[in-house]
Image (cartoon, rainbow, N blue to C red; front, top):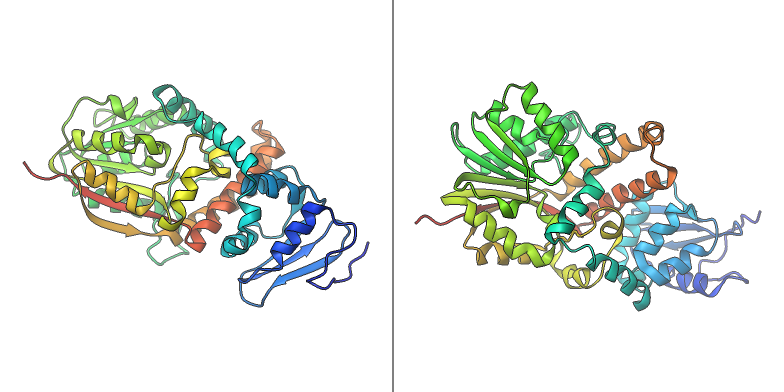
Length: 407
């Protein structure tokens, strides 16, 4: 095998057209560095000396044509297929994110490739029928699957480390829930609505530590079953009314406060006005809502909503991230005042790193649970992809505190 290092500005003879196009783009890398091993074993190095440093081994040339045709989705699919490998997936994705302006033609994909995936994404929009189907596709993989790599609190949203990145994940997750409840100014004896109650982590703290009552809704049958068992085990069934119900169908208002932790991402852009209007309808005058949302940078939003990405195709069908300006616009249009914003994106990067490490450590158990190697590679890419995006600031996570005006 030829392991000699080629001039970084040379293209080996016999390189196919797609490979030549990608190599020419990589020559323009300006941030971090990339060491590339080509299918013939020769090496190319791009970029400078600054961090991050990444390495990529192309086992064949298919990733180049896949990326040119379908952007990040094609590049991800070639990883899933085993056409390339890297010793550090997150660092590789960070280099690509940092050099978006230089590699945009490759990562964004061709018009035809983007159109095919965009049409597929549009078919997953969150009508009442599709909402349950979309939630089922992700959250009903089985509680045993999620228990393999989430912490014991079963929180599947960003933790808040507050500067102490070495603390146990469960402790940081409880801090996240505690901050959300405090933002709502919820008091003992009051009634909270949780839109997207997950596996019952917030319901547990709300009822056992604050002495409040809760109505929680979800569209996941697996999550609901787990959460019901959880509150029953705690002796809090009378305080926590957990339901398999679309949030749009809730009628037993008003609530003293509302929490919705990373649920808005599953709503879909065309339903954001309905989401905020529903929260406003259900909340008492003067009440507060805490909405924790992943948000995409304002400058990336318009292109993002005109296309689709790996997460929407493989992980969260029907999903769409708001940007901060869109979030505020829709919240205010529903009559809310945005009284506080707490951003903690780097905490999400740390949370994702913990999840990915636990997930990969449980690879054997995941496979024993009936999932195949392709599934494992999809999830490995998903967790690293998100970690890189939070680390580089393309996306953030924010706890927004909203207040409904007094009468």
